Length: 287
Image 1 (tube, rainbow, N blue to C red):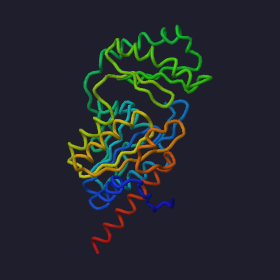
Image 2 (image 1 turned 120 degrees about the vertical axis):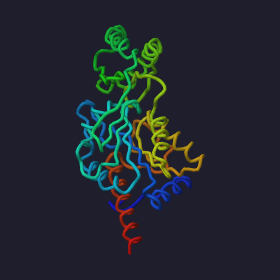
Image 3 (image 1 turned 90 degrees about the vertical axis):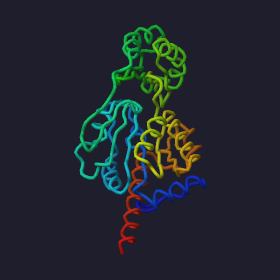
Image 4 (image 1 turned 45 degrees about the vertical axis):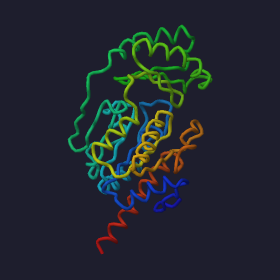
């Protein structure tokens, strides 16, 4: 795909979603995951950074649409830092919905709003190290502190997949005892409060801004609720486009997507192509 070419959706609903975004861009909400979608997956999530061309592509697109929402399980502050979203001209229409929407950073103000943390997170945090040691999973397994959630990564283990399978049941039990849920991902289990997911965050924000169309791009199991949210919005009359940042680790999104691109680089090309096409449309309308 050339930088200015848009892919053809493989479904009628996806084509209708793309057509609506191009026809009325000022009503469009562009929702995007961060890790694996705008930023390449790396062994140490603390070192994850957005693709070098992501912010320029977002800055080119954001003024042309109703809003861009980066929806992530990370704390909003971390997502803003890793994404490089702060103080960027053109990104005034961007928000970061961190912790699956529990936190919100607005590029216009640079401020974060958030409720008090769930008390169960502290309990899980206290018990996790001993539990992992008792399970014999400490070698190559590590804990990521996420403020309003705790994540256990197995990517560095000798057998990441087997280790994740070994931990799934005990960590789900630990989460449940503290009123949390265990959300699986790409070689990670995240223990977090229930009631918020990317689907809820996307739907609530779409309703808040009165979105006339929605695009959502993601790469991991945690993005499936957002895919379902787009399906529900479609059923209610809001056109939508599902984009998969393709990987070999997770195939569920690829099977449901209207468009599959080649990882974050492909997502960046798609965003750039959208900005170009909308810009051409606006120029044509003016003349």
